[in-house]
Length: 386
Image (tube, rainbow, N blue to C red):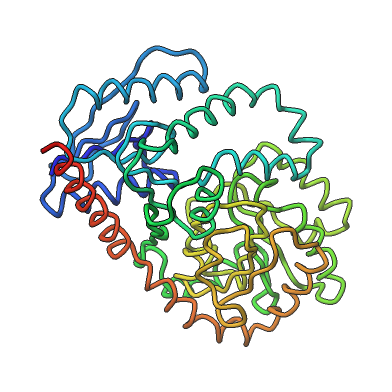
């Protein structure tokens, strides 16, 4: 078949971009002709992959997003693809993959998180949010799609309730993980990495990894960690990721008197090594449609503490390879969960179960499921044209 995969950006970094790359490669390996419809791209992963750039002039990110969606509508109308799969904010596709979940839900959740600072910049976000919501309503309108791929039950239930998407039209396919890049063998270098960061081998290390510190719950983690170090002063917290608001969190750590135990490492090129060197990955997120880092952590054998507001929490077996708290959990509840996982013998015992969980969600199996959905939908499209 000739399949169009639609996303504004084809790049070497980013969660949706990773899915786009892996899916295009799997489809090409299955013998299909693949066109990635985008505004910009890097090199293709396979000779059978082609690009169609749509770059109508537009000023500002909001209007670029809208212009691209409108360009896609015109392009698809004038083309003869067997099936079109949208992976971003567009309204013209047979298969809609909701990798980021509902934008309406994201806006609602974020307005409830640290509302003062978030709302201060509302005037900057408002135009883009309004356009994103218009695109989303068009994308989920009856007749606008044949199938929806949700990357968690959390997202499936949300779009069904919010937009009336029939449950039988939704396929839940969890994000995949590179089982070679994220592998327990990385743990062999953990002692050297910990030493290079000034952490004693016997001091427990918790890791926070991601951008969007407010949404991912860094404030309540810092407050929870401040309670934890009262009974375990040798514990350490690594904060990894890029966020323009980092100085505010550094000041919070100082005010909580934990600046000596918290290391802000910024964006790193070796997240897999840091996940393997940590004892527990902690992601107390307020909203994540999935959260790649949960699955990546499991793949290296590191247990995870997260919340039910992360779609990837659905993969965990509490008490075996991690723990799942309520999406609105308090810092006290988070501190108690971290304390329960403060025994290194316990975390090491969880390593095998964590890896076994991740192995059920390697990229080959995940992309195969997505390819089969596209092939099935292509047959539906073809039947409707005859």
